[in-house]
Image (cartoon, rainbow, N blue to C red):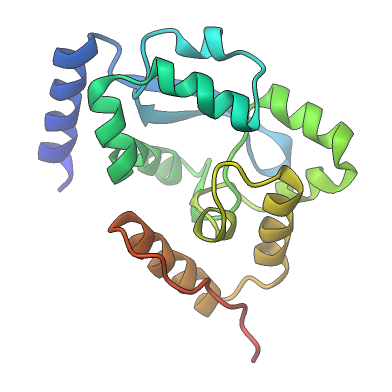
Length: 183
């Protein structure tokens, strides 16, 4: 069903900045298992080697210089995330859960925030509570607090609340944050 859209996006990337059209990056999944996460490429080829170990505001600043023309539009519409549905079908990811993280960042964050490993009890998600509530510049400790809230309070209503908040955020509205299930 998504094939025409995927083909159109792939062609646009190839015309704008060449190949490859997909980005494949190692991520830490459930129980610490590594997997390859797929996205449409939004940065210049080999940008990850230049962005290296940067986190937070420095990573955001450097990423701007690496972004392709079509990449800006893909990120704004979140179409770059669509290939992660393959990761969901493979069982590496869920639709909702903590976002997957690079192995090097995971090791660093576990040293800074000893509880960080606790987010590995669930599959990482295409979207999550931290993504609907915060910004890219939010601290890792705050993101972890949102992730841990989701893990502790997983429910059908919270799951669908995160999905609805994600859709609203993508189309440009900023809804009230999903609330945890009180019942």
